[in-house]
Amino acid sequence: MRRAGSAAQRRRRTVAVVVFVAGAASFGGGLVVGAAHVPQERTLVERFAAAWSRGDYAAMYRDLSAASRDRFTREQFSAAYRTARETATALTLRTGEVREQDGSYVVPVVVRTRIFGTITRPMTLPVEGEGEDARIAWGREHAFPGLTPGAKLRRETRMPPRADILARDNTPLATGPDRTSDVPDVAINVVGRVGEAPAERRDELRERGWPSDATVGLNGLERALDIQLAGTPGGTLRAGDTVLARTEPRAAAPVRTSISIPVERAAVTALADRLGGVVAIAPRTGEVLAFAGIAFSGLQPPGSTMKIITVTGGLEQGIADLSSSYPVETFTTLEGVELENANGEACGGTLTQVFAESCNSVFAPMGAQLGAEKLVDIAERFGFNRQPDIPGAAIPTIPAAGEIGDALAVGSSAIGQGRVQATALTMGTVAATIGLRGRRPRLSLLYDERQRAAPTTRVTRTEVARTVEKLMLAVVREGTGTLAAIPGVKVAGKTGTAELETTKRCEPTEENNPESCSDEADPTDTDAWFSAYAPAGEPEVAVGVMLVRAGAGGDTAAPVARQVIQAALDR
Image 1: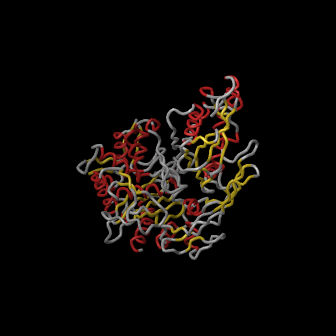
Image 2 (image 1 turned 90 degrees about the vertical axis):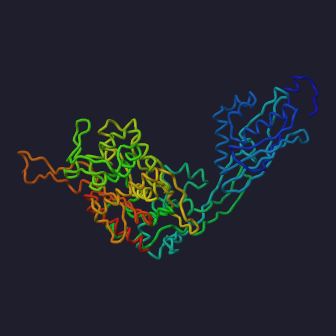
Image 3 (image 1 turned 45 degrees about the vertical axis):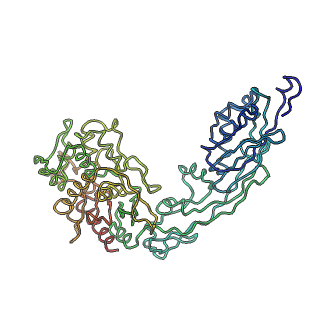
C-alpha cells in the first residue's frame, strides 16, 4: 500500500478490504494464517477474520472503529451475526490465508448451511485509518456476505412431504399425506398425530430452518422421529432483492422403525382400555419393540419398582448383601412417623425374602441409611433427571439431594413415593439395565439390521447387577410377582404399588356408619407397576408397565407384563 500525504490525512483515509467466502469448518473453529512482518492493517483483518470464524463476537467488536462502536452496542453487533447465521441456517465457517490484492485484502471464507449448501460470495470490509490506528468501519451489511447497505437477509422456506413410517417388518404404519396404514389397529396406538408446532419447540425448529407453519409430530412415532420424517426443507435465501441461494425441498426415505407388530398388539391388548403405559425393549440392541398408552409421557410415583434402584445402592455401599437378615415388622419409623408395609402386613427375613415380599419396613430405612446424595446419584445413573433417548419422552425426576428433605423424605423416595416420578419407559429401562449386568442401553425407535448391540453406559458393577437379578427372580418365583411367571422361562421382575392419596376410605365417626369404613387400601388410590426382563441371563425383552389407579402391581400390572414378554419371546 502506497503511503502519501500527512499523518492526519492517512488517519482519515478509509481502506476497502474485500473478504471472499470460501472453505469449510465450524463457527466455533477456523484458522487464519498470516505472514510475518506484515502491515498492521493486514494484521487487523487477519485478527477480525479469525475471530469471526470462531464466533468470537466480543473480539471482533474490539476491532471496530470508534464511530462504529458509537452506532452499535456490542449486543446489537453480536445479534446481527447470530440472526444472519440462523436465517441462513449456517452450520460451519472457516477463514483461510489472507492475501493482499490490488491494495485490498482477500480472506477466503466458506459458509456451509443446513438448507442451501455452500454459499460463496465476496464481501467488502472497510478499514479506517492506518498502522496502529487502523480499525474496522462496520455496518449491518457486514454480518453476512452478499448483503448491501439497507438490505435485509431473508429466507423463504418450503417443507417436503413427510416420509412414510414402517414397522420393523416393513409393514406401512403411516403413508402419504393422510398417514394411512395397512394395520390400522396397530398404527392408531403408535403413530401419533401431526399438527402445528407447540411453542416450546419453535426455537429448535427455527434453528433447523423449518418455517413457522411447518407440520410437526405432536406425539407417538411422529414426534419421536420428527427429524427423520421431515426431510430437508428447501427455499430461497435473499439479500434484499438479490437471490443468494436457492434449493428444492428433499423428502426423506421411508423410516423403518423398531416396532414389532405382534408385540405391539400384545401391549395394546393387555393394556385394554385402562389408563396407563406399557413399553417393551430389546435390551441388547436398545430397540423399543412396542409402546402403548402413556408409556412415554405418563409421569407417576413408581412405587416399589424403585426398590431395584435402592437395593442396587445398598449393595454398592455394603449396606446389604445376600446374607443380610431383617426382623419381621409391620412398619418402620422414620423421623417419628410410621411407614407401613402394604396392607400392614408383617414382613422380614433374608434380603431375598424382603425384596420378594417388597417390605417397606426394610427398604425405606435402607434408603435413609444410603442417604440423599447416594440415592440421587444411583437414580441418576439409571436415567433419572436426564432427557430420555426417545425424543419428546418425559424426564423422570427425583429431587436434588439438598432438596429431598429429612430421613423420612429420603426413605419415602427410596420406595418410590414422595416426589419421585417415572414413566413406564423409565422402569423398563431400569429392568433392561439390570438384565445387561449393570449397563444402561441407549434406546432407539429405529430398526438397524446391522446393529448387534446398542451403546451402553455403565451404571453399576456386574456383580451387583447379578445379585439384583437373583432378588428379582425371587419376586416372580415366590413373591409379589408370581402372576408374571411363564413356564420354562426365567422372568426377573419387581412389582410396585404407588399410593396416591390416602389408604383409607373414611374414618368412622358419629356422622357415618362404621360398617361403611375400611382399613383396607382403596384399589382406585394406587398405581400398579411392574418392571421385568426375560430370560434372565440372556434377556431378549424388558418391560415397564404402569396402570393408573389400578390397585396392586402384582395383581394387575404383572399379568400385563407376562403377556407382553410372552409375545416378545414368541416373535
